[in-house]
Image (tube, rainbow, N blue to C red; front, side, top):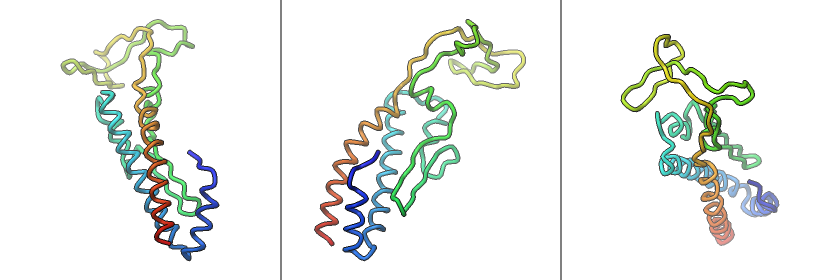
Length: 166
């Protein structure tokens, strides 16, 4: 998300505050990142996307499967996950690659109650997938819409607070 004029405003306010504003903005931006992670987790739960909790847990600061980058110089924050299947869960996907000209595929693993556990080493059991579309839950898209509204309001309020302070 890019906000027009934000860098120019920061430079002016930073100059007025002898550099103290950048630290304040960095802390606020990190807080906004944490808020976004919470919203993403809430949307994963609300849309009933959670299964093994791997996806849910990948949206935490410091988790090995996530992306969390905060740059103080340009005030950039990157939040996300490194899990390969996260985009498929959000956007939807075919159970089989349509380019491979198949109508079914064997997936090794085992059933535990009504839940299937994938195990690439399993030789004797598994499930047969038929070609079909699995609709995505759109957890990320929903979280982004919520966050953008919240971010704008928070930024307005914070800038006014900084202007009143400095």
